Image 1: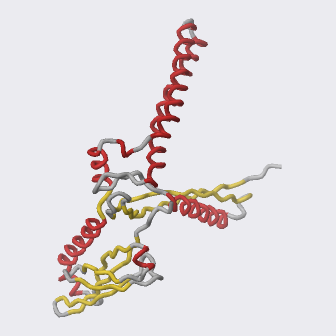
Image 2 (image 1 turned 180 degrees about the vertical axis):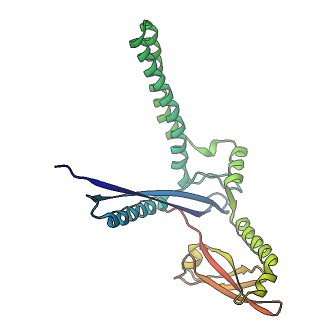
Image 3 (image 1 turned 60 degrees about the horizontal axis):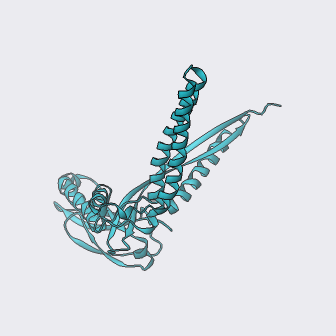
Length: 268
């Protein structure tokens, strides 16, 4: 009996800002992390299309959640260039991919050599080339196992690590200052437009970490009008929650809305 399935595939993606406290110099720095999750759902005889789509979406989200929990990138500290211990596995897997691609290329050359031996009169040449490339594949594999187990990205030149850090990471204070400066510039440009609106509001980002939330800290926030305000965090705070502040522009009150963004950390 033929069973007909219609398989639905759902892919979800997420980008977050990872916060890291360097284990060497204790600098807080951040970098962007992106991952995707994929899920499948079957609809037998096309009888449950809606349910299959929902199951696929749920599985994709579950897979993404598992990935994001321990995911990281091997990015050095922008202050001291140290690669954290929890990033070593990622650094080795990245290196393994490069060596694996080289091994695959050499293996294909080996296959090509044996194919040459079977399809042409150059039998001996093909056997020799195929054998040599096959041995080279084995040597690369052995080298990869030894090299990867002992590989430490911190042994790379510091200048090389600093360059990578400058490209992909930023000290937390610089990251937050950049957001504050952009908001202040945008607010300044749009003050006249805001004053003309019926219910003028201006949103800007507030960045906090989970430790601050857990301890219900009071933090100082740079408002886009150039002032500073104190905000009392709550343990129940979530991404997207807001804090509102009033400010007068051309005789009209403008609501400054601080939207909470929570840093994520690799749980390892």
